[in-house]
Structure formats: C-alpha cells, structure tokens
View 1 (cartoon, rainbow, N blue to C red):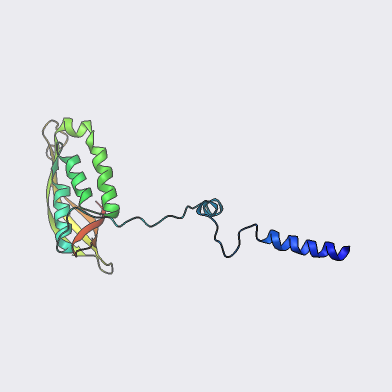
View 2: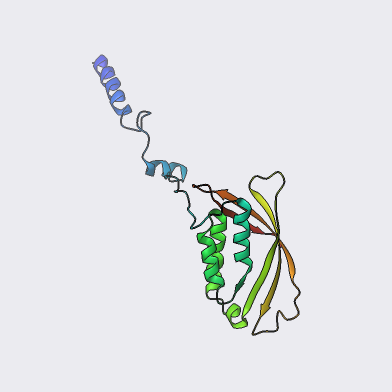
Length: 178
C-alpha cells in the first residue's frame, strides 16, 4: 500500500507542477504588472511635426523668431503653432505655455508684447544636435507702465534639433537659460 501511495504522490506532484506559471508560458501582462508595478505596452508612435526646415539652424531660427515675437492677442495661438511644429520636450513646453497664456488676464489687460531678433546660433561643443541661441528682445505694453523705459535684453537658450522622416529638421528640446 505504501508503494501505491508513493506512486500517487509522485503523480499528484507532477500534475500539480503544471498548474502554476511554467517557463513555457509567460505570465499575462496583468500578472507581470502586478509583480513589477509596470504595465508592458507598445512604444508610442513617433511624433510628427506639421512642418520641418531643410537645415538644423534653419529650424532653430524659424522656431525662435516665432517664439520671441508675440503680443497678448496672439501669444497662445503662436505657442500652439510652435507645439505643432516641434516634437518631444519642445512640443510639451509649447503646449503648456499655450495653455497658461490662453486665459492670462494680466497679459491681455496690459497689452504686453515682445519682439526681438535671433543674434546668433552656434553648435554646442561636444553635444550632437544641440545649439546655443542668443537673442536680443524687448518687452513693451500698451496699457501699463510696467515695461516703460525697459531696455532690450540679451537672452541665451539651448535648442536641440531632431531630423524627422523626409530629412527635415524640427526642435525637440527648448531650454531658455536667461
């Protein structure tokens, strides 16, 4: 009888071994997420931009010129346009800025505007597709004295570009430094 019990125990152990997750069958995505606290998903599709420049410097100059020349009535629309023309962090930053300026009462009430020129664009040494951008800008207002007598100011920013399918260039990161 003990021989039969031993054989039954071995058969039961073999049968039960197949009940759990085996090396042949990976756990379900939900089980994996429960264990790792991460849900496996497909990579996001690549971002597309509504327009691209033929050169990296051309993309930077076009973006920055639009970025620094605005007025209270056009700021939000201008930023949404820049978001559509960029990818990555630059798109996220422009989308956020557009949302913040859309209902900015002080901006509109003061009639605030900014104008300027791109004075220099130079590759950042040792960094691929990164550039230093220097602008000279002036902020004015039509309905407040807050900007009266303010002299034009120099600003520095870091811009990163990315080549998109088709060979054009767009901004992928925009980091004002001053």
